[in-house]
Image (cartoon, rainbow, N blue to C red; front, side, top):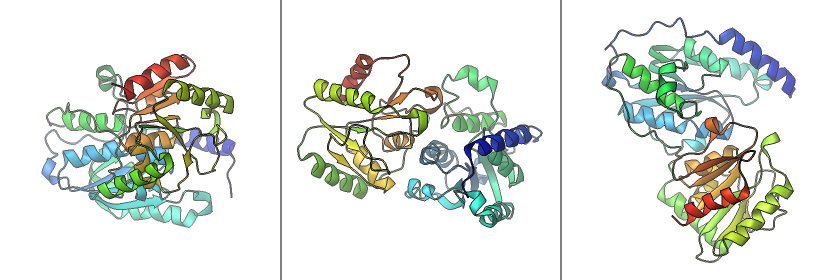
Length: 349
């Protein structure tokens, strides 16, 4: 049964209204009561099935691993994509997954909630402050220490990038620990990272070599996106032509979406894969990845490749790719010459 979008929007608003105060009555632990060595079992909650949202969890997972050496982590997510994303994270002990379509699998959905109440953790982190179910799951979980994901004005004033969706859970954890007696952590924030191993990277290079059949550096584009985030065929054709003109010594290839479609009518050498890690490994062997705001854009970031993200309806302050020289452009406020200059600086630093 497919639930209409309008019904889902109503459901989200109702649930947000009900749960917005969940956690605010939570009594903070006694100052000095949390000992780093005592945090052995950690639960991170992010009940969303989209690829991008699972990739955006990787920084908080790395932060937990770095902060609590030797800990084991459970993830409470939705859908099965997290298994591929965290495949090479040896500290992940268990991935509990809600069904992607809860109304089609109500028994399984409810069962996962009940399973959670039967487990004990040392620390629980809600990784999405806007998730009603995330706040509820954090509330009902059994743990000595809980980070609900509140917005802290003190952090907002200190860090301009606080509202980025993958950064604020890290900032919140650091703030929480500092407030209960630990030294302030000012280390550089972790990047998105799917931890591709040597064999995966080698296989990705072999695939890329077969596509381009030369030694030139490669620009990879991805012309698809969901809904209003997707740019038109004419937009992408114009952009593709500029790439060919401005970067004649580079290969330009296209990664195709699951729909096997192309906004440039398959004019560029292209490849298609449903394997997330294989996609990431191919991207990792390119010099730059260019796309509109979507999950594959975050996959490129997680493959540690310089990424250009184009935004027209979503907020780059929340979703921009970052690290490795990555940049985001609001296409309502910038133009193609500026984009080409930025690409040139990445390709020829």
